[in-house]
Length: 69
Image 1 (cartoon, rainbow, N blue to C red):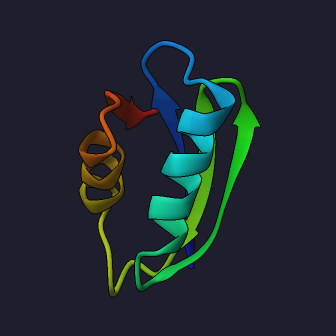
Image 2 (spheres, rainbow, N blue to C red):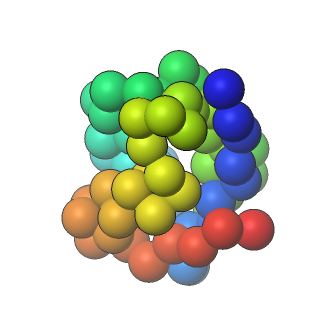
C-alpha cells in the first residue's frame, strides 16, 4: 500500500469534505481516506489498482481542485 497527501484548493465545507471522502473510499483499491486538515486528505491506496492521478481525478469529479502535497 502507498500513502499520499492530497491538498484541496480552498477549504471545502464539512459536507464537501464528506463527499470527497465518500468518493475516494468508494474506489476499488483505496484502503483508507481521512481528512488531516481543513483542506487535506491522506489516502492509503493500492498502487497496482490506482495512480495518484486517479485519486485527484475523483476529487475533481466532485467539483474540487486538488493536487499532491
